[in-house]
Image 1 (cartoon, helix red, strand yellow):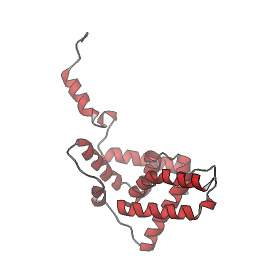
Image 2 (image 1 turned 180 degrees about the horizontal axis):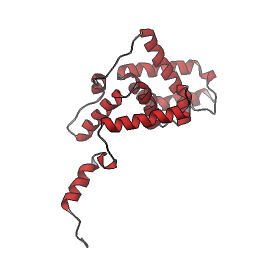
Image 3 (image 1 turned 180 degrees about the vertical axis):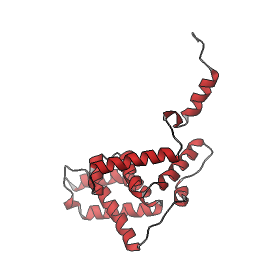
Image 4 (image 1 turned 90 degrees about the horizontal axis):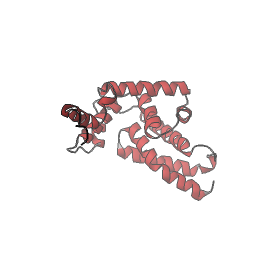
Length: 186
C-alpha cells in the first residue's frame, strides 16, 4: 500500500473513529484528542499495517487501546450514570427527533461499557462480529451475546416493546388508524 493510499484510508475513517471515540469517552473534546492520537500512532506505525486486512479494525484497535491506557494512567474512570456528559453532546431543538436522540444517548450511556462498546462497533460503524471480536480480544460468541444484551437493555430503557414503538412514524400510523380506511376509488 502506498503512502498516499494509506493516508487516504486514514482520512476516510476519521468520521467512524470520531463516533466510536465519542461513544467510549462521552466527550467530543476527548474524542477528538483520541482520534488525533490514534491517527498519529497509525501514521507512525504504518509499516506495521498488513495490506489486505481491515484498516478500520486496525485503527479501532489503536483507538480502543489508547482510550483504555489513558484511563489506566488516570487510575479512575468517569461515570456518566446521570447522563450529564451525554446531554452535552446533543443540541436540543423543538423537534421530537432531537428528544428521541437525547433519550437514546442517555440510554446508551447507561449500558455497561462492554455492551456499549460492541454495540457501537457492530451497530453504528458497521464492523463485523469477527472484526469486533478481534479488536476486543474475545470470542465471536461473546460479542454476539454482548450486542444482544445491549439491544435488549436499550429497548427496555427506551420502553420499546416492538416495531410499532419505533420512530416518528408511530404518530402517523396512529393518526391514519384513527381516521379509518380510505374510501375506495379516491
